Length: 415
Image 1: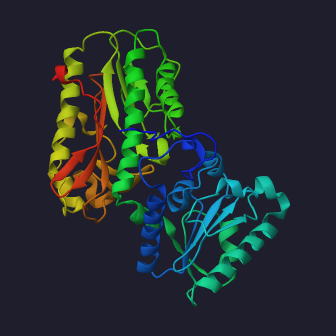
Image 2: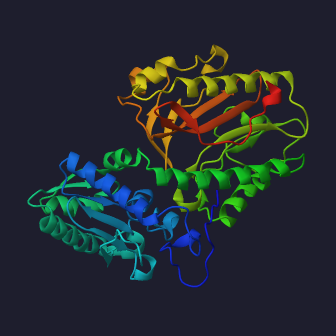
């Protein structure tokens, strides 16, 4: 696959912004944008909402593909998107910078947000929130046909109260966006594969750099460097650990120096080119051959991944998937990964399928659908081993079962 298409100079003919500007995408980006907006509006109609207000920057990206300063904007209620169910999409930006949205066909109108977060508004916070509420109420009255039901994904009480005072009712916008994002178009899958390809190049650079004496942070930086240099955006976590830090899981990378014979385990959580996530995990041994104990826990993790991939079938309920999943040996069950399988798109997404032992407490209803993209998880570690193995594969649900999207090799000679 040609990740960059045809490189171009001068103005951006492909109407992209941000990291992939000055490249030609491998698919029609406007077609992807229209598909995603239609998915959102279909959910709004299904839930009988007049419109939706999006502050979560991943949801804004999904809705209109505006990309500038996404991480910074996620700290503040600044850039947001309003979508009328049967009307326009309006981007409210943190300042008047219309060139940042130029050529995005799904954006009908560009406005400046009356930013009301305390950092920028101080003691005028309430005044600014009232001004913003006037704008949103006017849009609902203009395009809602009398419907006052507004979905919102994330908004503080400061922003919600004035909307309620204007007679609007507020509903869960996260549900709308999670259900919209769950089914991928063929073009989205091409863009997701671009992110996976970049991720696997980065993993290869990590593997080449892994030797005794390198720190966890320096090893992790190889993945960041590859991602950024090839048009990726950021990495959601720092989940890389070595030796005794691999048990239990969820320690992030540190200044620890990796030693000969250490297990090294990591989870990429990489937001790559075009904003799609590549979420895969691998475990290696530094410098030496694995011990029998390391091989043993690796073999269990590999078996769990392979079994759980094999049971996923179109039309299964989430509970049925959980019931058919690999039974984790008791020695490893206390530190098992929190979910068996989760959705993936612009980041970790719906659904999260729980282990059968906690399903009644934590699980929820749902069905495996065609063109869901999922991540199959495993963490195997125990106190006696003193180390843990993290493996994960990204797959696509098809009529024939699952098709694996990630391809970086496992340690087959350990099995």
